[in-house]
Image (cartoon, rainbow, N blue to C red; front, top):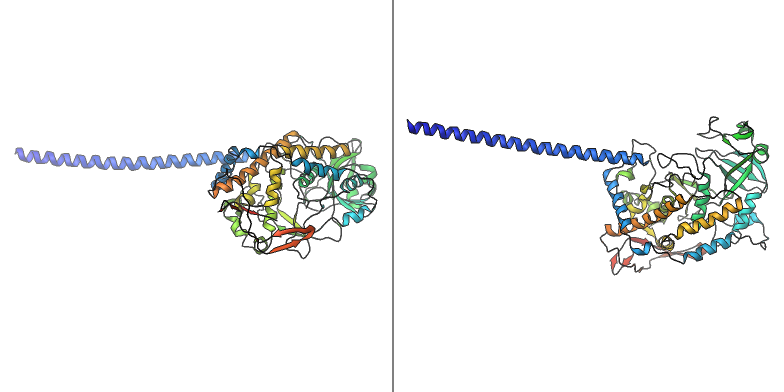
Length: 494
């Protein structure tokens, strides 16, 4: 009897232990599932907060891996070598040369039109140097206007002006004060007329002379626009509170949003139109935005997108230098905060290496408080940069880019008799963005696991080369940049 009870007690204990073990396993699984749910919820919540932060900064919701890359780039800025903060005094020679071009030489007697017709070629719109540059700018600031019409280009209000000698130019009116900050996405708002002129002088400093000449001019609305307006434009001109106004004809033009002068005067930018003998070819930009908050472009979700772009013949480094031009444009647009380059244009000729032109920069200078790093996607996805571009960027390190740009713009605003064309906030933003470009280069170096603090030692194996206009030798194709026997960030000399 005693033995029987002991057996029952043992069986009961075993059953109890088994039950406890089952309960323990179940509790562990439950807690594990709960932890996963909590972590999942936390991650989703954190991602949601990141997305809300991006929205508040005027950016679309980007994939997490794209955000991580941009965060890594930002971190690299804080660890930049000291050389990026030191001022290279050689920038003064570049600035002095441009100022000499802007000085008016009274000894230049040949025809202005003849000079302008000789400017463009497949790699530039403004040659270097251009001794008559200052003469041409002042000539366009005062030459008589004979006809004004709607320029049905793009979606914004623009005028096509014809001068008495047959030259043509686009006119973009002033919509905003210099201090206005554009809120929302990077491509929001109307064109900023001063951005065209700022872009022109920045391009001169960076030796990107594939940009149309741009200047500031004040127009008399009644005498210069209304008197010479086409019937279609004239139908949109009216008087409001003794001021002359018009709204023109374009996609977004509306009588509810006219542009008005102040005491019959309207400030705007004049962008020189190309000679009629030159034709442009338009291409879709591979890094084009979708312009939809609910749909991302392929390059925004695929960090290996650059390799796919290079499968196209025109972007293959074995065929042309178009990709290097795109990267130059990306750097330029980032400095200017222009996130609206959905297409690009080149001069039509038989040259496969025709330069990408820096046309239409009106959506720049939106908000100096924001840096849209995704504009640099061609740079940080391809990790390629033209050697000449890299050298020029380093030439303007240490705050000299903002200083030089301000000097040139002060000259322009003085000649045009207008307020300063750029605020200190925008100048500081351009300097800050230049550091970001340096940070992207360092990011590419670290991504390939090479020491960032080692000085570059350029050694190129010369392959077949092409002799281009202006005695510009293109070493092409070129092997990757070598540093102490190791491959570094791809750097091409063009």
